Structures are given as C-alpha cells and as structure tokens.
Length: 491
View: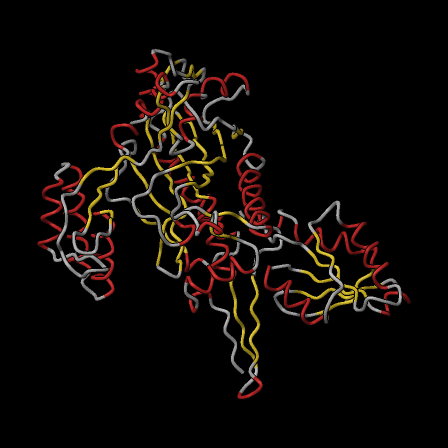
C-alpha cells in the first residue's frame, strides 16, 4: 500500500489550479484576461481568510491585556510618508534585459543566483555575492551593481544573456490625486504599509484606551505596492493585506521584547498545524532604513523558504520622525521612572495573503491507497477545524423517505453556530469527495436509522472514520472540535 500526503511532493501549479477550481482564489478581472498580480478570493477563500484574520486578531487582542486594536484609513497626509522615509527610501533596484525585454529586481536576480550556488554546495560563494550586493546597495552604487551582474555572469532567465540596462531605483508607492479639479489636486499615496496609521495615532490610543507602556496596537488592513515583478501566485501582490502589531516599550528594553515576540509568533504558526521543519528564522543581513534588528519567519513553500512574517526592532525611528516633522510631541510620561521619552517599538508584521497561501500549501494532500489496478487517489485540504471555511456538511443519504426534512431541520438548528453546507444530490461518496476538496472537517449523513433513534453518522475528513452521534449532541461535539481554544492552548 502506498500512502502519500506530504505537501512537499506538490508544486505550485497543482495548488494554484486547486485554489481556482474549488473556489478559493480567482485571477482578478479574468474575463478581461486578468490583471497581473491582483487576485480575488472566492467563497471558500474569503471564508478561510476571514477565519485566519479573526484568529490573529483574537490572539493579539484577547490573549494580551496590553494590546488593543485600530482600524486606520488607507489615505493619509502625504507628509506621513516623508516622515516614515518611504518617499526617499522605499525603492527597489530595477533592471531590464535588452535582449528579452524583461524587467527584474536586481537584488532578486542576485539572491536567486546565490540560492542556486548554495544548492550546488557553494555556500561561501553565495554569501559573498549577497554581501557584495548589500554593500553596493548601501552605497547606492547602481553603476557598480550593473557591472557586478555582468562580472558574476548573472543572466536573464529568459534570454540567458547579461545584456543589462542601467540599474534604476523604482519607488514602490502608488500615487493618486485628492481634490475635485485635477489641475488643483494634491498628490496622495495609497499606503504601502499599515504601520504608519498606528504611529500617528499612538497618543490618541494611549490616552483613550488608558494604556501604560509596554503596550501594543494591532491592525489588519489593505496595503499597496507597485511591485516591479510580482510572481508566485498570491505570495507577492500589488494589493495585499497586512496583520501588524506595534509594541511600544521603554528605551533599553528592545532586545528582550524583540526576543519575546520572536518566540510568541513562531509558536503561533506552529499552533496552526504547520510542521516545525517547514518553519525557520532568517536574520536580515541588510536592514531596512527604520530597523535596528530584523528577522523573518519563513515557511517552506514549494518554491523554497520564503518570508511570511517579519519581527522588527524599529527603535524610535517612526515616532521620532513624526514628532520632528509634525512639530507635535510624540512622548510618553512614564510614572514608574518619572520621565518623558519617545517610546521604542518592536513590530510583528504578517501578510494575511501569504499565511493564506501557507495554509493552502500545508493543507493540500493527496493520498494513494491500494496497489496495481486498485490504486485510488484521494485529494483533500487538511485545515485545522477552527480555520476550515465550512465546518460541516449536512448530507441526507437519499432525497426521499423524510430524510431531507430531517437534514433541513439539523441544518436550521446548527446554522447560527457554524458555517454549513446542505447537499442532497448525487451519491454520498461523491458528496464526501467534494467536501474533502474544500477542507470540510465533518460530514453529517442522515440515513434511515436516523428516523429510528435520532442518530446520525459523522464522517471525519482526515481519517475517514465514521461514528454514530445523537442529533442532540451535534452542536457540542462540533463546537469542541472547531473551537479556537484548541489553537490557543498551544500558545
């Protein structure tokens, strides 16, 4: 007998195809041939993403007495992005290949080449390449970076040549105008991150929520970046959603809180059901303009380990710059030490779309059983029941003998507590298979025995085991299985 349910056996193509076919993710504006790097979430994708965001929100707000929430506007005063450094520093090095006419991020070309060398056992050479690239970027030596691409024979993946244009800095912010007359309009930006909405509201939240340092402000919201090369499905998009928490602390305590949140966030990802061997920390060699220390939590996607969340020690960079440019004090009076100061910040920043993609990759399973001509394959999505888009399916065995009426009553009794599907068409086997494909943890079959003793059969997605349960016990049984306490108890 063969049994294969390892995510690593599947490539991105299988997962992307499954996501579209079964209502998780669609290309945006597909009837017009789509829009590059923009996607829509289908019925089950929207539900899964909502469950993921709700879980993050509750983990941040409910499990931490000193973390509160915020929902800041997407549009902000343009000076916000001057103070944050985005207008001057939020750039990627862009380069074109003259032969293929394809555009790339120069740093990604180098990193991909270094990854290839590492895979070939040339780890030291790979590290040298990345270090030299970082040196050139820090010095803003774009001419040197172009020469570096050619000297190291870093070629275009399409043309195979090093016929590169000059490297240019490309600002990633989308701009638009605000005002009733275009000629008189002022330029504003779609926010490239959600963090600044938290920083400019620091004192508002601190005072109105009566918070004392250390405390955090959490937010979930849309952000927009005009990526040079957006690729790998929903991993890198131009419109995406962030789940960020800024934790305000006393200067000098940043190291201990940085380590604390590293540990807490890694435990959170493992509690979702992600195997420890598919997660790792990756320390930044080149720090962002605001960071004193930074680490990524990376997940092993089919295309390798990639960032899903960042933990950053931002010092007082943001609050200090906003204080300087706005001329408004961004200080906190600490009664314990009788002192005013601009707080330091430790940030946790997770991409909701990347975590969604991680859940898809981790949950996609294909099991093969039997041998020879009797080999059968079962495909299913193994989501934690608390995250699954649909919690249970109500399935009358046949469309007669009063079974649909019983099924409808069960559905009506449970629909206020769980997201359910009712289905009475086709064979029970095909209906089970459809629920497996969208990750429904429980299928509740109404059969003729139900009429005799008011019991139903619950079929479990992962094991395919079945058990008889009283209808009166269904709510408690499903509630226990899908409760987020089952995740939180692991934190």
